[in-house]
Image 1 (cartoon, one colour):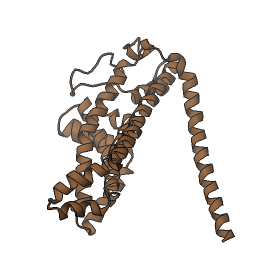
Image 2 (cartoon, one colour):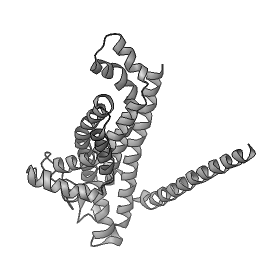
Image 3 (spheres, helix red, strand yellow):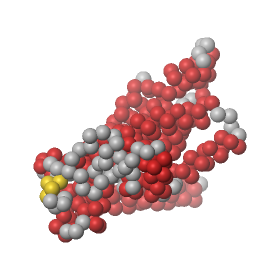
Image 4 (spheres, one colour):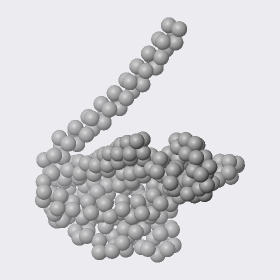
Length: 284
């Protein structure tokens, strides 16, 4: 008994130390970026257009472009991903084919993002002739996010007790009515969290939009979904590695990184708040 308690204490200690280490590293990174980028943050930096080859002005087109492409990603990936998760969790019979689908989805989640970018060029830019545009980039990011949303949504459905389904069926409801009225609302907090976290990842990706629509320097807003756009991740990449005056724009690069982190943080915070509210609502 004493040995088991000792092993348990050691295990919890290692887990706690690992969590503290990760949190400490994260805090150091955020502190360094905040320290070096806070001086570049101003109202003009957030709402102005870039000028003089991105050595002056702000990042307003990049902020709007990031929000725009993320919105298209959500419209494409969340309904399709949740629908696929409903089929796998509630309708598909267990067998080799279903297991093959699940393994394929998990493998797709591990495919490098640059591969999705090249596939997006072949399918959306060239195949469907959307061109290098917001639409092509948003759909490419949607494909990147889709495996994540399917997996997290299916896990959310699995957490719903079977009695919720059986109770609705016993009252004469159809299978779809049972899913819509009992299962889906109960799993909604997990679905919402997975979807928003997937979108926050998509908002920070550079490789999938590199060939499908993002522009190096475009001091204007896109007029339609078929126009090119600027985005915070690619803007940061250019300022940090490809700009002709890297030392001059380094403060702007740190400021852009700080804005991107703040944007992702707000998205994640939204997921936490909504998850808490819906979980509290359905637990009453």
